[in-house]
Length: 72
View 1 (cartoon, one colour):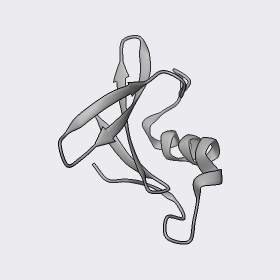
View 2: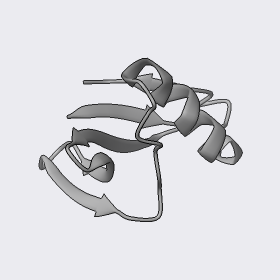
View 3: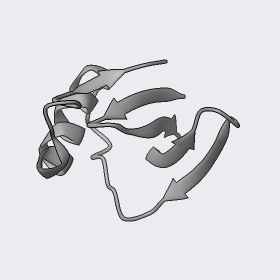
View 4: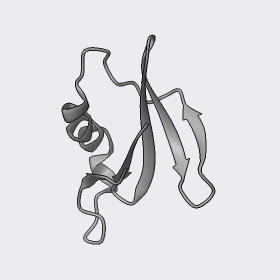
């Protein structure tokens, strides 16, 4: 599972045989809740995911959280 800090919010992304799945990530308790309203195209590569998440959530950018970074 790939875990990203998306402008201060932790999201996890997992590749499955059915495509990419996105989860809200609670890193303190290692709990993940599936998010069905965030779609990542099947043909997208792992390296393209931070840019995609940045495009979707760019309104959440702040001085404190200016970017999307992989944390795990």
